[in-house]
Image (tube, rainbow, N blue to C red; front, top):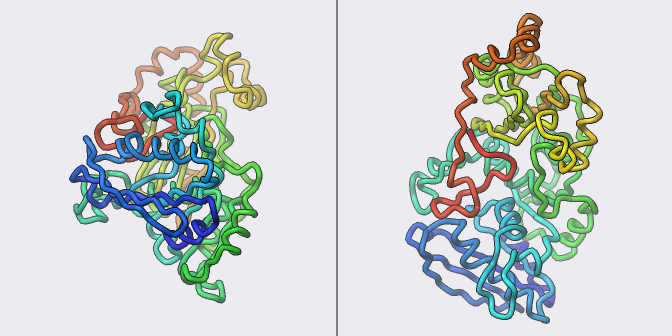
Length: 411
């Protein structure tokens, strides 16, 4: 990706910004700014050796200062692997920047616009990474700033691709063979994201990069972060099985039994690239529960309140698209409560997953009890009932700052 950044930097008016975080655990940041082929490297000491501090203390103010220059028309941020593009985009749009001379305090997004997020992947290692249960700290062997990073390798690999507007796949042979499984995964994970397949970085020139960027759809994400109530299937992905890769839709208008769901979740670990969706738990009738997995890691969090459990004023204030989707499925008794999940498998048995999830639903007798004695149902064992918010999950954290969960608060 550094090669792509250098090629983009050959266009007049383009500034390349990169950060070396290898010494971040020592509180030291090295920042390079390349303009017209000349790079200036500076060393900065941070009060906290964390990614979020880097965002606030250096990158965001730098973007504001560069945007104020008449000679700068484009800024290319070549992210260190420890940065997550989603966290950076969230920070650009939402984290206030203060103290920049001649500028009113506020988010950097007032001065810069995210035109595209381009990510690179290795065709030989990414398929295994996205199914891994290894943490970044374990992968690094405990060395450097990544030594205490508890994000999973799968979470990083998945997030890099899922948030991209364009993908460059490195390591593909000239015949294009040997990548059938990877192509099948990408076709279902990011069906409308254009890609460039190359054997080595030196095959890429400015013309090929421009052609890739020109293929980005007008309605691409470009830094947008979708919440838990957005449609789960975007871009019309293929629903047929291909090369052992399947996309499963699981939707129902009855809730899960929390204990049985907890037992059933094991089917989402092996051979599953990702699972995500909105969950209705019988013991939590007011709360929307968000489930999201990447490889061998899974998290469950709170995603707000069902519209049926909010006041009329609260429903009126909800996102119009969410209200429209709720109206399509509204039930006279349970309102918009439902379960909607999408599961992308690579090697797992789709029928086994469907059977496990169906087995976790309330049966007819339990549905009768839910209708007649909801207070008794609320007393059932609920492994998902203990709520906590991870203070390190926010980009505004002062501690680790390793990533954000923009959709939910974790349980």
